[in-house]
Image (cartoon, rainbow, N blue to C red):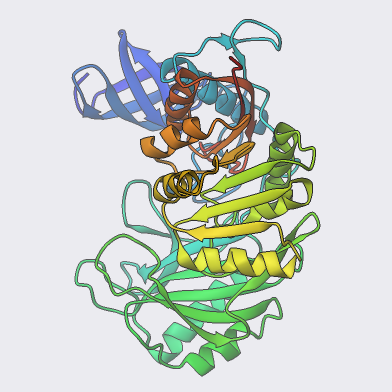
Length: 466
C-alpha cells in the first residue's frame, strides 16, 4: 500500500476499536466507519509494514447490518464507534470480542454451545432502547474557529471539540443545561480553558442525573479557585426544575485528568440521590457510579445470581466505589466489607450504608492491593484466619494488581465474581486465578455502553476442591 492510494475492499471483520478490516491484494486494511459486509472505496492514510489505515470514501455496497446513524456527528465524534452497525450486530460483535480475548489472552477454549467443551460465553444482555442512557456526561468547553463558545466531545484521538449539545446517548436535560451554561459564559465574558496556554477558566461541564428521581447536578470544572458570577449561573441553571444541585470542581493542573479533588457547593446538596432496586445511593461529583442505570440493575442481578447467597457468607467488595454492589447484596450476607482508593467515594459509601440502614457493611479507604494483605496479616497476628466466602472485584480498565490476585488466592474464597469493563485485562487475570486453583463457571457480558465498542463482563469462578 502507498499513502493516498485509492482501493476497493470488502470488509471481512472488525477490530476491537470498531474499525472495519478488509484485504487489498492480501494486505490488511483498517477502515474507520466501515462495518462487516460492506464493499467500500477507501483512501490509504497511513502505511505500516504489515497493514495500513484508510479513510472511508464511499460505501459501494452496504452490509445487511449497516444502519444510518441517528447522530449527525457520529462519524467525526470519538464517542460512538458502532452507530452504523445494527444493534443485534453490535451485541454479536461484543460477544465475539469477549470470546477472542478469553481465547487469545487467557488461553481458554471456547464452547460454541452451553455444556460444550471450554468456556461458554452467554449472549450479551442488551437494551430494549439503546439510546439516551447515560446518567453522567463530561462536556469539554472551548471556542471554535469562528470564536464561538462550543461544548461537545473530542473528535477521535484528538482534543478538537465536536460541537454538540444533543448527544444521542445523554439524558435530555443535558441539552437544556449546556444551552443555559453557554449563554451565561457569553453574557459575562467567561473564558473557556485553553490547553496550549493553560489560560482561561472553564474546562468541562459535568452533568450527573438520577434516573429514579429525575433530578440532576451540574458541576463545571474550572482552572481557578473561584467562579465569577456564580449567583447568576445558579439562577440560570435552576430555571430548569430538574437541576437541584450546582457546584464547581477545581482543577488547575496542566494534565489531561478531568476532575480535581476540591468541590465547592453553590446550590442545594453537593450530591444527588439515585435508587437501585430498594437501595438509595448518594452520588457526588467524584463518585464512581455506573453510567447506565437500566443495565446496572441487570448487571447486579447477574452478580447476585452468581453469588448464590444463603445469608451466611462473608463478602468482600473490592474497588467498591460508593458501595453499590456490597449494599445491593448486604441483605443476603452475614457480613460485607468494601475497599476503595477514593476517599470521597468511601465517605459516600459509609453514608449510603447509613441511609439504607445496612449495619453489616464496613468500608476501608486505600488501595485494594494494600488493604487486603494488611487485613490478612492483622487477622493472622490475632490468631484468626482471614474469612472470605465470596470476593467481588470491579477494577478499572487496567485490571487487578498481581499482589491483590495473590492475596485473593491466599484467602481461598469459595467464589470469585469478577466484574470487568475491559475483557483483555479480564482474560489476563482469569488466567492467573485459574492457575491458582479456580475455574470459570459462567461468563455473562452486559451491554452497558450501546453504540460503543465497550462491553461489561461478569464472570463466576469457583474454587477447585482438593
